[in-house]
Image (cartoon, rainbow, N blue to C red; front, top):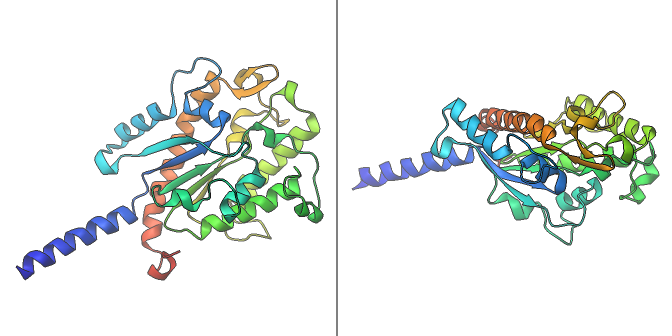
Length: 272
């Protein structure tokens, strides 16, 4: 009897450890731009979708059952998903949902903003933080450092954060596009590389998906072939076809890579 009990305990422990180290499922929190890329509202006919690409990923990697990747999508509850709103969400100061509301059921959490975030008003200064919703490059960097810092406190989860959604030429100005381009380049090439002097080493449980650069030209404006129409910056079907495969491959390659990293984290560092 004791041997049977010991065996059962061992099996249960193995299953628990496996699930704790398994980063194959989660949730994608978005508004309309994300819905387009998901493939449900693509402003034009797309030939693929994120669900289809996840099925392709599982097939090409031979993933079945609990090994398979899966992601649910949700239209996030606040009226906007600006970086100031995301900041409140992660700090737990929001009147709507909070990040803790999603952690128990999702090992992976993906967040993004929509194209209004690219209408940046100024380069900014430290005093901008007194007005969190003010759209300056300084404030955006401040928001991101805080958001990523909170993400790093949950090493038992894997997070993905998208760079800005771009605006199409008829909906923005060159100076706005330049500022958005500069911010997104900093996010991917400086912050995510651990080169930001104010933040330092970038956490291994966070991945920056550079959505912005995939749809823009050198001036930071959305390429017209990816817009729904003049005056409408929602990604069209061509954008969905381009982004959906990259999104699935990048996010899940990074999340699955983190499985081995998580195993090496000291036990005391996992209980956060």
